[in-house]
Amino acid sequence: MDTPVEVIQSVKLDDENSALILLDQTLLPNKKVFLKLIEMKDIWDAIYQLKVRGAPAIGIAAAYGVYLGTKQSSADSYDELYHDFLKVKEYLASSRPTAVNLFWALDRMDSRFQKEQGKSVQEVKLALKNESELIRTEDEWVCEAIGEYALALLEPGWGILTHCNAGTIATAKYGTALAPLYLGQARGYDFKVFADETRPLLQGARLTAWELKEAGIDVTLICDNMASIVMKEGKVQAVLVGCDRVAANGDTANKIGTSGVAILAKHYKVPFYVCAPLSTVDLECQTGDDIHIELRPDEEITTKWYSEPMAPVGVGTYNPAFDVTDHDLITGIITESGIAYAPFTESLPEMFQKKRFS
Ligand code: MRU
Image (cartoon, rainbow, N blue to C red; front, side, top):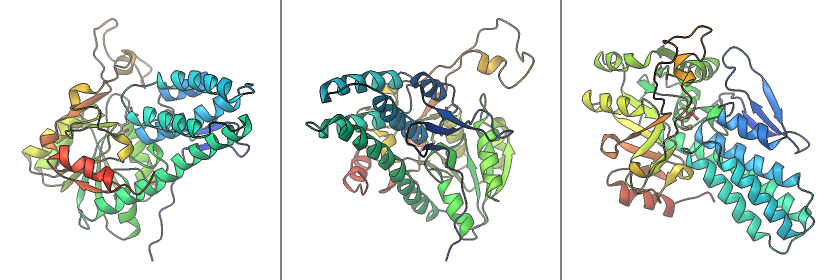
């Protein structure tokens, strides 16, 4: 029997169900600090500042947030409570635009609220708590299913390159792109993982390298501009990445730099897989052009993480947090229902038909 790899839980409710507990990802790998957040402005800020980050984890945090915000309401009727719920929902929805999981989770909480029509305020609050917990636990099953489908594509000893962090701290457990690595570790696959550092916020260096090393997985940190040489040297047999939104035609938004990795992978004939929970697939976006790409502050590329400026003061900057990988660069999109291959306009809807989780 496999010995499961121990992983950290980065997003949860406290024991009294009255606060959000978050592992502050901005402090990793130097400090492991758990925040206890109650106020909506603090939860909004934690999402915006990437204290909680990664599409599924953002969705889980938003679900817990909208529950906590609604729980704090003093409304004494269903309609008044719904009014307060919508205010919290709208506020949290304004925190980050690209990861569709944020909106997916808030909409799912909204549907649950509406199903409770006619119930007392206390009953609705309890239903919201249960729904937010379900969103978290379902994400664990989803990640494990993605991990199993992905692992079936890989062979022991392979070199795997990943970009950004689509790991356990970006989800409820195990991650999406990193899930097969955890499952493989428990089964003796002995993967050699290359983690792109992922400028500018260093999710690869600070988070992926940290969590894989903690799990005893063989991980080598490289700068983003080294992906080409490791592929050319034959050290990489597959690329696995996560995603923030997949359009109906398979175009995929993920952390800035992902599309460059996909172009390199095509050049070197390395398969490029996107690991995507169906909560990240947005069939309402026809193509990647419909995906709203978040622009982040200048200082993330001029100063952040360094005590001294690393660019001339006042220089113009452009800091998109995500880019879109064209569907024709993607070998397959690995979901919890199976693997979607081109043409994605046909295979992605089939994945929804086979969906096992709500
Ligand atoms: O800006 P971030 O750190 O939230 O971006 C995260 C990513 O791009 C991840 O690859 C993606 O959300 C998938 S997480 C399973």
